[in-house]
Image (cartoon, rainbow, N blue to C red; front, top):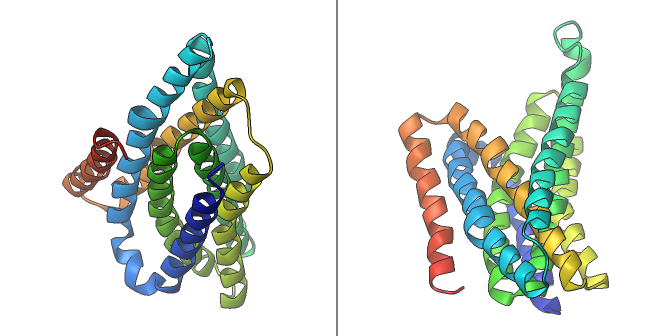
Length: 246
């Protein structure tokens, strides 16, 4: 197992989240561009890198392609359901109890980021278990997203009325989430059959993060042409890394 690269990638992801949050005032006005770029990363990572690897591995393990395909769809629906449940909870009665619920809105929105971060950490570990180059590509995409998350976490926490000290504490939790996910994979290695299903689930999750969360956020913050351009840059960057065999 590529233990050292997994640990290094996890540390870089941690630093990206934390450092972005530290400079939130300078970065929050440009976060839409970073979101669009990261959305391209995640959509390309899922469709161009992870899913083709999954289907090749499935063929080698003599697994029918329907299983990883349905598992990928399950990954999309899992994160969609998780995000909707949390959003419904922290927006409930929002109009009637604006002052009382505003700090809770920031807190539960941050927990959404943490759930994504843990899943991304798992993807780093499993990516390196399968192939060193795949782990590198996954790590690059995760770091770009964690950079967005660091800015978004602190902005949401402060704008929803939470104290700076508590907001920084939640930023640290958000930063540590991908580290915990990556370190979890160091304690066990999985057989090819389970690796196929896990990676396909993560591919679906990444497709939702890119297309279901980052891209809509980018659309809200950017003009359409800016979102299209930077999404295309992010997508093309992953395609390029795949083409040169990283």
